[in-house]
Figure 1 (cartoon, rainbow, N blue to C red):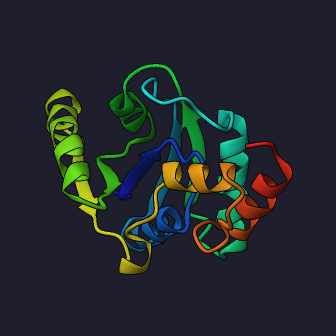
Figure 2: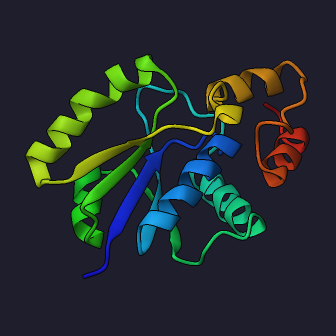
Length: 162
């Protein structure tokens, strides 16, 4: 039986911290679905299709395994996608106690709804302070985001109005 995991997120934009979690998840599972989801509680900088494209290019540029599948999901429950692809595990990157407090109730509900377990993965300390919202703010103010995001994302955001 193949071990399949889903790494969900808004990835608006994808950061080096995201890539770290994705790479480590790929080392633990036979197949990893990186799922760009719509978060109704956030105003997105990039459309979902652009986030998917940037993720695919960043994963390829990083030389990550071809067992990583990038997809998007905007309708229905996250566990519905998990059941559709045969995933029994969600992987969530956790930077702080705030993330734990936010993610824990969702993890319990996902397990109750569909038997999908959640694994919390700690970041590499070099990326523990980086979030997509911080990257968006720095980019909007004209700062250098290249230490925090894959090259393809930095190049894209330098050309696009933020």
